[in-house]
Image (cartoon, rainbow, N blue to C red; front, side):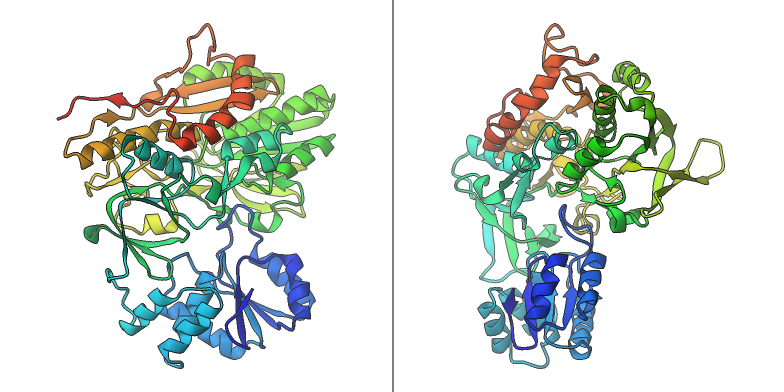
Length: 556
């Protein structure tokens, strides 16, 4: 928490339990500038508001998408500053959006030098905002202060760090920058195992700073906008980063708010999700304590990150109940918005064997639209072919929710996006269809492949190879075949290792005598449990392309 003046302080993300300390320090109001659902472990505004209210503090919600601070937002912030009891604490993910709002709201009241000095003393660099104010509210596209790099990578997840390492392994003299505001990097494929009681949550997280490749510049900021015609990325706070070539891989957005009531009940009332770092341990707690009742496992419409994850949670839970002798007292229902159990038919027979083993009900075309946690009721829209749309209400004792998923807001509104909001690339070269010096990989681009970390592992060398080839003045020399992998944990100790490419073509990494991916095997389980995590941390993120060398194509 940093004081800008006696009336306003700004802070990074706060928690409900912090409110008592803030009240004791004399704060009378709280303003939340961070949209709910932006982070994996973020408390909702309702939780903050409830905690503040119990202490007699006012709380207001003025959510701002990172990098999208507008003049009307600043005006509303100014009105809140005038009307709320003081002193006021404003917060967002890092405090930058709140400091930006205050700076813009004071543009006509204070000299620019005062705004700059007060925010700088609080630890926030508002030079870009001051430039914006000085330009009459216009965001400058380029100044002498703008940073420039050979390659700029947006996103420091599995795709971003891997492609940076792969680039350096091919051309070590490149000036590369990764733009990402996160402090922590997560091994998200491990969260299913956390929810199944196999991994500890802490084993799936490392600090971002420890993983950024040596020599790569880390710009710890959010992206506000893209200006591809000027080869520029505009950051939160209006700073500008220029690039020779751009790689876009920020991942996707988990849209928790699209399900009415979900945010209010997630993490309590038996409602959980392995798609959040802080919720996966709750999944395992619910599985261990449940002895009877109904367990729902939901899957939203595609596309989603790791399409097998919703049923992985179901299989591991059911396996525990089977081995603990309680399965016959638990009604398992898989609620799938789609019309098939798995999109590649070769793996369905093995999965159906486990559906029958666990006596799980399959409910296709059922999309979760609302949750009443205290009442333990879920509402689904049922869109069966050639039938009228209807809603059904289902009671539950435990429910594992997979949230709807979309491209991030700053991608969807950008000139890089297709009509559906995803980055528009050639599915073979992963080069943007409109802007020749832009590439994309990972969950955010629109190639018709599975959105998995295994896909990013194969995509990173392709993008790196083609960028280096482009720098040398050559055409693309590597192509991506749509490879994705989904290790389906059907029981503790066995996995159906689904590996496939575009059009559902099977692309096994191992000979069939070693791992038959269409059948559950102990070998595939050992791969998932023991081998893949260290490969992720020590090989993939460091540019070691084990079983991921790109397929070469003849130059055009």
